[in-house]
Length: 128
Image (cartoon, rainbow, N blue to C red; front, side):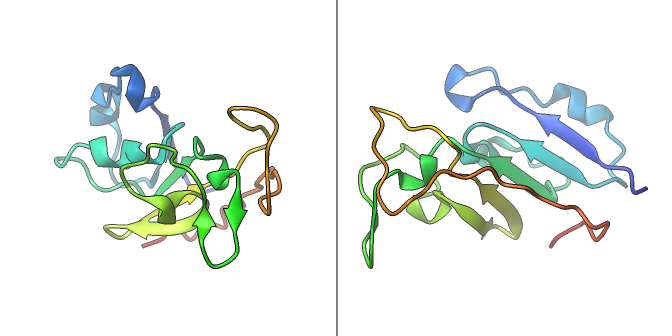
């Protein structure tokens, strides 16, 4: 029964990331930022309370991952390869990046199976 704000933004590469509607948000409620690219957190306006959770994709988890090395190739994520998959924190903001179910540049995955992530919010937001 907890009220939350789900706020989605266009892909930051489109240059149309807009937070103006969020200025009307009641900051007493947790906000979940939904973006294709985890780097959207870097565009978050400083005058707003930090998002309580960021949900993203874009990286395909690195698509090809080698043991002890990690993902091969670059997904053009300014946050770095640490943010290619799973739950990580940036400036105390939890960012969950799913590897998704598709590939980019051809049907190639190695040691990085596709996933459909199911996230259960248990009413304990904020997460940080």
